[in-house]
Length: 81
Image 1 (cartoon, rainbow, N blue to C red):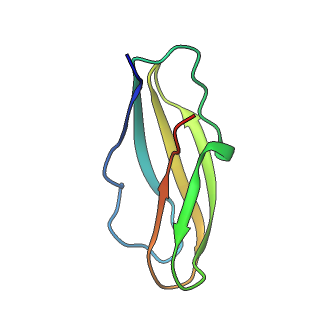
Image 2 (tube, helix red, strand yellow):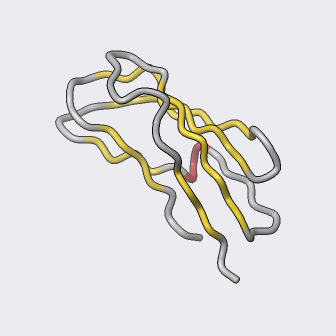
């Protein structure tokens, strides 16, 4: 069975600087370690942010976007692999 990754809604809808936290659940995976390098930021109009990842529980991670600069849209994805 393939792993299932769920990115939950952000801790806030809008912010000037951050932080914004997302709980990420990874189910049906073995030996998974999520790191900052696994996160792909998708930003418009030159928006930037720092990414931090911490493990919250066995299958949960917290992805934090902080030091957000710019005024537009910022999101992230976790590519397969």
